[in-house]
Image (tube, rainbow, N blue to C red; front, side):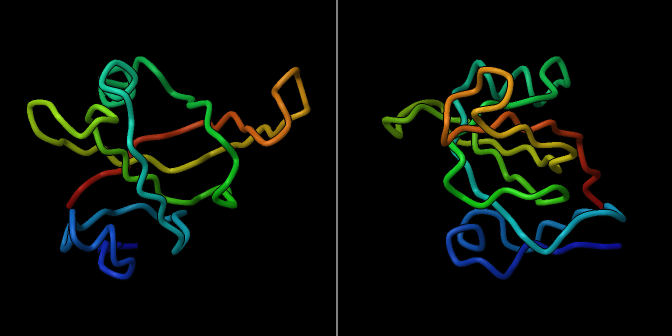
Length: 111
């Protein structure tokens, strides 16, 4: 399936027209700020899971658009990587605090 990011206003402002191909992807997108150290590890596939506050109703096959940058909004500019959620463990399972989740991620292809 060819997936074009266009239908969520904040995402549209940043990455409109990016085409992503992934057969299992849902229509749900999450635009998330990511600390530069974590973003670097995710973008080069050294980190395949991400610990997040579970406040966005994450589901398997949702698209994550991860924006690299400091949380103060300053730095060398923003870069993006795209991941699909493949598995979710929500707290309080396995010692994860209530209200948080561990998201397993896989890369998606841009076309």
